[in-house]
Structures are given as structure tokens and as C-alpha cells.
Image 1 (cartoon, rainbow, N blue to C red):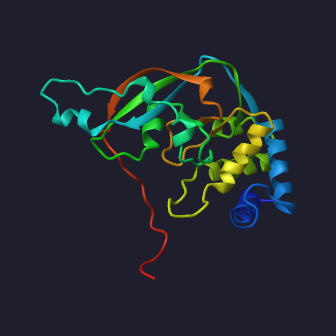
Image 2 (cartoon, helix red, strand yellow):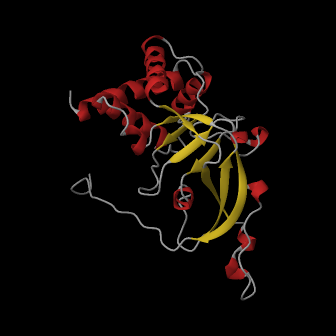
Image 3 (cartoon, rainbow, N blue to C red):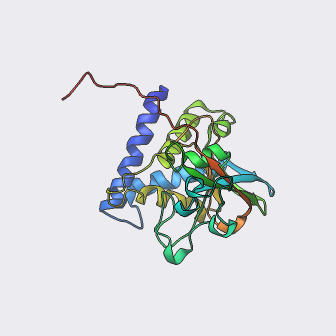
Length: 246
């Protein structure tokens, strides 16, 4: 079985499960879809579970308040970073939900590098961004699906399947697609219910800037300091994939 065949098979099963969750049974997949979810959660816990030690340094970014932009400040005044108290996950009562957390439940989305954290915001050139340094306060069990993690998976077929699942977790969803995050939210909930405290996965926003980490309990990491970064460049490498207008 080729890598492409494995990726297509896992992707098709994933999308079938997502359609079922979105349009048939939102909170509890049935039949083959439940079997798919249970099987991969079991395999991930067996082969991809790892400990992230206390003291691990991670990063989280937020755009600065426009009123604090150095462009409108007196000459010589340095830009002001957001307070560390503003850099955590939104409280559950006002949390609109995200790729992996449903509305009303707070997860903490972090990155392994400042560049990785900033790139998740898709900022414009010249934007001023506060980047907070977070430090984990305890040993945390996570599921490792980033490329460095996958190199430790001996079976090639399993490694390719994990790579596909990582991509499914990282690809942004269109804001107008109703229930777009239902599948990734359910997958994260299943891992959490099985004992995992987070996931490390590849970023869809940038390459070469480390992986992303989501912690299911925001209390497992605290903001230690915050600094302002200015985006010097924002570019995309593109490739034409059609011959012209349809």
C-alpha cells in the first residue's frame, strides 16, 4: 500500500466521520464512524503518547491594541505589550470555540517558537504583536503528531496515517461553514476522555517555525512575560494548479 493510498483512505474515513457528526449525530458517532474514532484514539494513545515536562517554554500571540501602536505614539516611546493576564485562553463563559474546543470550553493554543505563534494570526507587514512566554507548571501527557514525533513511529503505514490526522487537526476551517470544527472537536474530546492532556501538531500557517501545542487544561501553563514584535515581512509561496479560467 503506497503512502498516497494510506493518506487518501484515512482522509476519506475522516471526512465521512465529520459528515456524520455534522449532519446525523453531533455528539455521538455511530457504527463505522465510532469504530474509526475509537480505533485511532487507541492507536495514538499506544504509539504517540509522550510526556511534556514541567518547565517547557511555549508561546502565544495576540495583536496589539491599535491605540498602543508605536506609529501613533510620541517619537521614541516604545510599543507597549499586552499584560500577561490578557494572553491566556478566553474564559469559558465568553469562549466562542475553536478548531479543537467547542464553545464554552477553554483550551490553550500555543506554539513552540515566537515566529510560529505570530504566524497563526496571519498578520500583515508592519503589525505589532504581543508574544507571551508560557511555561508549563507540571508534567503533561500529550499526543505527539508533529514531524519530529512521527520519526519515532517505526511502522511506515502508521506514520503516514498519523501525518494525515495531524493535517486534519491543523487545517483552518472556513468561518461560514456551519459545524466545520465538529470533527476536530470530537476527536480532541475523545483523546481528552482517554487521558491525554493535549496535542502537538504541525502548523498549517507556516513551516520551519516549530509545531503547535494545544493544552486541554489552560492551567497547565502560565504566562511568564510578554514582549512586542513587529512583523517585518509576510509572504506566501504559491503554485498554479489549473491552466486558466474555468
